[in-house]
Length: 325
Image (cartoon, rainbow, N blue to C red; front, side):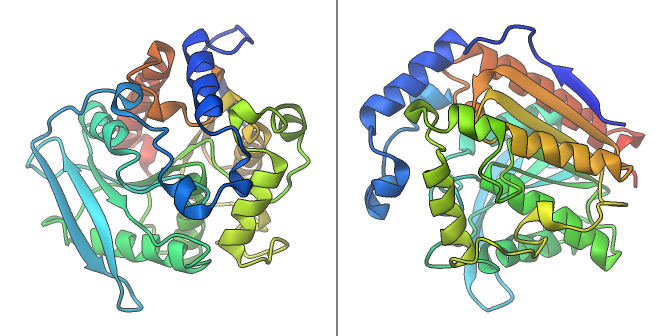
């Protein structure tokens, strides 16, 4: 059975978020797919004022690990304590095409501190230069690196997480871990994930045409084509988690969706599929917030309030019996 929690009963866009999305639209009024890639990758939309202050931790380490194909992959390790702690492997969003480990820095500092976990952020290689399976393999290699004790300890519990495209990568990692029977992953936290290529959902039809929300059908077609090398009909569940034939025995999940997100129905349907296959799943609906709200903690009090709810649920999962398979 799917447990569903709404953050608010209201159904209107949060006024602070409204200011942010309107600012973003004014700064970048063209659809994403019409913006030159270099320009889109350096848009400057995520400012320090919007993201919020960077809280200090016991340790923040930048390093590289060697992927299975020999390439060097940057990672950033956030430690709230120098003692061993549960680990969250995190993949950033950006349509597998944009952003980097810098984009989620403030949010992951908060996650490490509030959830009491070591966070490993993966700078996977971006598409279209590096289409699937390269970004997924980079994340899988980072997961193996963590689970093999390379942090200096073998984690008692490991979660995978990510936002948007990163939520896709995290969901796919959980499926592969289940398929291999290795039980590496104890929990998955999926933040407004892009898990399926169905771009005709009600939320996409309703919200996609609004340029404030930036994820139109055209934009998502662009992102999916970049990631899948044009094979948008792929049925590979590690690329398109909605394509899995069963989710039985994958790690317990917290799926977070936003009320003003064209991908809202994608995430909701994924949570429903998990629950239908008897995966312990909770769906948290941030009813008044848009896609990308975790990057607005400095400017949107409601985003910070919802983030704190997420962090507490993650803490409970990693520091209690809830995360056991």
